[in-house]
Image (tube, rainbow, N blue to C red; front, side):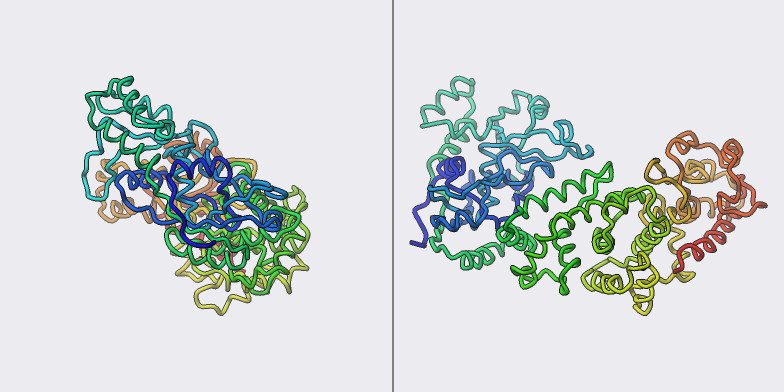
Length: 583
């Protein structure tokens, strides 16, 4: 019968997870807690703080076991690379079990801390699925002494996820004794704790005895898992309960719920597995590292087929979800090929800053049947120029800033009517021309502002790719380079020796020397060889003409002539930009 049941110990709950008496329904999202949240949970338990109640759903109906998907708890968590819960086949299973409706994050945290590991990326390391970038870390507690309190809400007990390297680094025996937290479950009674204290030579450490006794009591003896059991077998009622109980804490995104509905309703395809595989394949495209998520995939499905593209429950009814499943493999192929195209056009995760800008291109690829042709070397060059021009202009003009549903709908409506002759760049610009904030027009003031985009900025990169359209961005590595070396302007002693005050101020102003006005894109090898060589000598050595630098023939390349160089280049760049970017 539904209602609150007799509470259980954490140890019992961990055994039930291990024995698959506790499973996760498809409507649950992935584990999302950070490692420090897990550590704080353990600290809270030790300090006697309440950890709130849980809700379980008793699954005993054979039809429920067969028609709905359930997942095991993740045990060995690896950030980004291993975040997905393994599916448990419950079709034909005789044993009844409980699905966790409320408390998944806390139970998973306890399971990882006591029975598993948490691998998160080491700061400043690149994203690689290895022990150098993401070392396997298990949860330990220092039983030599508590954390020195510096502020009121800090942890009292020193719980930390540590790797083998961390244990060696923190191996000072006078300060630390790192006890693996999960080992507390191996103690059957207080006698075992006493034997451990003696064996490890900790008899003179009162804190160690206090901590182990308290841990034993909290995790093995105290019935801390208070839970409400729902025995109703109607999934619609449970779904309503799920939404209500997950409205607090870390908010449940609507797309989590929608993906869960798709997982439950797709008959032939595992929606959760397929969408996650799409996200992974997009991320693994060469070195681009494009990061998309399930929200992006679901939004793409809506734009491709459904009139109303908002994340609303009515848009994910059975009929719509069936359309997504029936066309899934073509959808998936179009998504992956589009991001391969973006990589070939010179973008990566950092420079392709508004991921929703990829959706109209996916729409174009899907409805034109271009998933095989779009990345071929002989694909229509004019079409690719239009696509890249539209992307860069969209980014420079911040078309996709803020709420994008209206923007996506407007662009899709244009594309529906105008795709026969290729990517409809002109038609999109025409549809937006009267929008005061979202338009593709370029006036002098705007061009002046983007020409001062600083070194390293995305806007500088977008603009430079227009100025150097013939570079092979796919096969070569290109760097943003200061034409007149930045070291010249960073040399305070050199700048200080300039007697002409106006010239000195001009040379010191980053708007001139550290912006597009003094930037170019160079092949990586050529840039490395250039180093801090002065412009005049470098241009002579490499047969670089003034025209290639966007300056008139009579303009000198000496550093003393820097103001004339910048003003002349600015004038010429404005002319070129109007020619190549005006639609």
